[in-house]
Amino acid sequence: MISALTRLADWSARTPKRLWALAFALFFTLAASWAVATPLGGSPDEHAHFIRAAAVARGQINGPEVMVPHMVAGIEGKFAETGVQLPEWYRQLPRQHECYAWHEGTPASCAPAIGHSGKTAQATTAAGRYHPAYYLAVGWPSLLVKGPHALYLMRLASALLCSALLASAVVTAAEWRRRSLALLGVAAAATPMALYMAGMVNPSGGEIAAGILVWTALLSILMSPDPRLLNRRLARVGIGGLVLINIRPLGLIWFAGALFFGLLLQQRGVLRAVLRRKALWLWTVLLGAATAGALFWAAQHPDNSVINTPRSLTAREAARQTFGNTETYVHQMLGYFGWLDTPAPAFTWLVWLGVIAALIALGLAFGRKREAVALIGMLVAVVVVPVAAQASQAEKLGMVWQGRYLLPFAVGLPLMAVLICAGRAPDAGMPWRRLVGFAVTGLALADAAAFFWTLRRFAVGTSGAWVPFSAHWNPPGGWALWTAVYTVAAFALALPALARDREPGAADGLESPSPSASAGSGVRSGRHSKVASVG
Image (tube, rainbow, N blue to C red):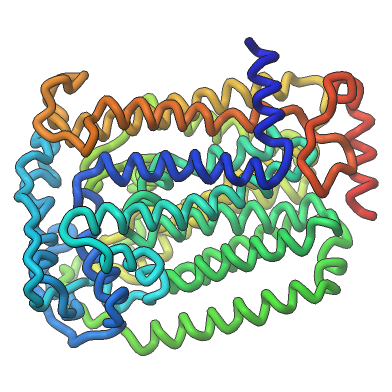
């Protein structure tokens, strides 16, 4: 059984094209399962993003400002929303979730049916000031069909975009000689929350997927240099960076953070070789232009919302509260679904945090002093960045921070830890492949548990039966079908991480070594690979 799984894993990772296609199909299956199994409008602010995407697809990049009364975190105010002209049924979307969101015991069956009226009317969206690039990428299906089908197709368009980015991260990780360890890092970074947002119409999905690609490619360039792979890795950094920067202004900060920590971990002499590549300067120009465009857009579209924050909410008080909420934000990065009213089961959090904690401990144990300092610095940054961000904005916006906002940056923590191990840990002395096998299997089980638990909440509510045979709400096709599809895809995605390590110097393809070569490589192959990578 084990040998059969190893052969299948080796087959899946034999060539970059095969691995990319397999990873793309499986990531898309996971994200699409979330897209179908979540009630329309059942994720944070999705109604605003649906309306923004449909408007951009129809050429409405801007619109008149409309002040709409709203309440954020219990604080009253007025949101500066954008008015757009859309089919009248889009005006129903802001109220779709109200009967069950924040009412955990109520299933989603209470939501009213969505109409199909083609009459044009004004709808408003709080996402009107966001950069239009993401919304153009996911909004075009709304031109093809009407009603709920258009909304599902927009979700699937988001899943396609995110799956392509995540599959590119998988192929990049598989280029490491110790690819099983590197692929474990991508698996740990792609949390259930990341996959959930990938299946929603929400910029967070694209941000997180792009963040995983940027971190994986940057660390590969600087920690595992190979001249033959440099141009394609630079292209992946560039593509991920363009997506990250063009979604929201925060993307520029996340990209800069990844670059900073990547440079801390670079091997000696790598930066000099990278700076001599023409491809670097081409992508630098493109990213510079994207940055200028994003900053110009943000300057031209300020947020004029008025939030009546209490006088007691000073920057210091906001920082204190945010630091106290660190555990909540960590849980939100792993899995807090619906309108932040549906936490993943404790099993999911314990497994995911256990794997990440083990990776950090191993990275600190095997990393050199500079690498250990960088890893600790990244761990501190995951805690401090939300505190600084919330303290600087609380008096204007209130306590609005969510864990998923940080996730495009925080994915670098497990990736840094695991890639330090992949580059420094000796081949002998620890059962690495067994460790990876248990870890990816645990993550797949935890992921499937989070999906089922969330689908159960929508079907019967948190007070309903553990197995929702008598579901009040069902996704198209039924809850049992999508639970089975998601579980199979989650375990199949763990398969490439079971592939045997690559032979030293095998850089252009991803061929697996023969069993004899794998067994005889030992510690000597690790030393030879370091020599070959500098050449």
